[in-house]
Amino acid sequence: MRRFYGILPIEQASAMLYFQSKGIAQELIHNLKYRRQEEIGTILGNIYAYELIESNKIPKVDYIVPTPIHKKRLQERGYNQVTTFCEALSKELQIPIEKEVLHRMKHTKTQTKKSKIKRAELLSNNFAIKSNDYHIGKHFLLVDDVITSGATIEACAKALLQIPGSKVSLLAIAYTQ
Image 1 (cartoon, rainbow, N blue to C red):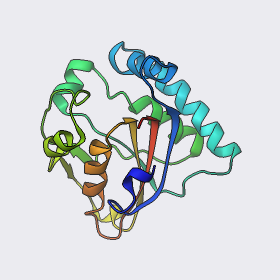
Image 2 (tube, one colour):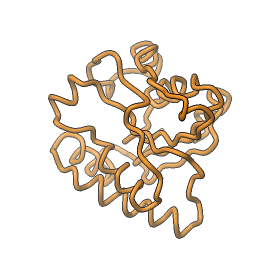
Image 3 (cartoon, one colour):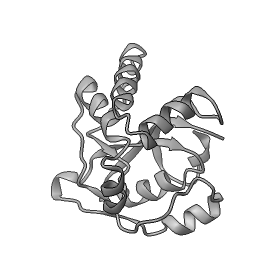
Image 4 (spheres, rainbow, N blue to C red):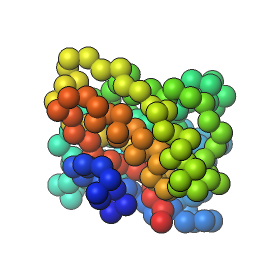
């Protein structure tokens, strides 16, 4: 994921699928995100964990951090679409999930039709950390469903990097150009 080179000090970045319009990845993500099929996250998380183990590319991290959604969106949807994916990764890779360190502060409308610049403006200062001493010096694996412009995961990573001595790696279910 070269789009973050020179922008963020990322340790490692990977994605499971390539997302394209009308493709299988889009169908899977939309079913997970909008059609309440949370089990897709579990299945994909199990498959990707297996691939990481088999390829010996398990990220050396302390915590898995799901990209947070705002509490209003959580109430509307009933779940965070990356949670089951993260839970499956956590179980198979034996890396704990840390859901409380990163919070989304503002509720925004969907970002899917906005430009990278507009997304970055909307997401600026939208994420805050709630860290404790045990977060200092830790390596976080930040997980999102789809990386499109990178604005959301970039804003989240910048917030996590405010923790002294922290490092961030990125992982997504899918990415697109």
